[in-house]
Amino acid sequence: MAKFNKPRFAPIANSLYAIEGLREIWRHETSIKVHVAAFIVFTVMIYFLPIAIGYKLYMFFSMFIPVMAELVNSAIERVVDLVTTDYNVMAKHAKDAGSALVFVALVSTFFSWVAVLLLAFEIL
Image 1 (cartoon, rainbow, N blue to C red):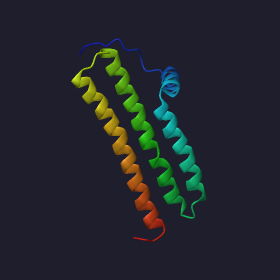
Image 2 (image 1 turned 30 degrees about the vertical axis):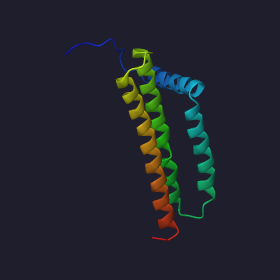
Image 3 (image 1 turned 90 degrees about the horizontal axis):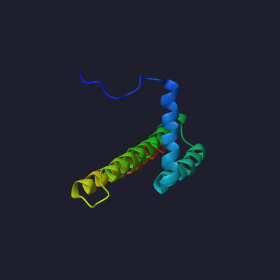
């Protein structure tokens, strides 16, 4: 088995790397700011909905999926930009796949919300 240039697992250092990654994406990606703003607005909306706490928790946690997808998409974009700054069809496909991930996450969260609200308000 080949050895990689990888430091040993260090929970505190790894957490600091993760926080630095969040800061970097926050500074350079408008889309993450949009996702976080939507997260905040919809969290407030959930709080005031007259539905059971279980439904509220499901809706709240489902909102993390698009945020996580956006983080993955940002990572893909950075790696592609590291490899090439020239137009490359494979680079385009990689970036498009990252965008598709975000789109699918948003659509799945939307339909999850619709299903929960239909159940909560006994429309189904």
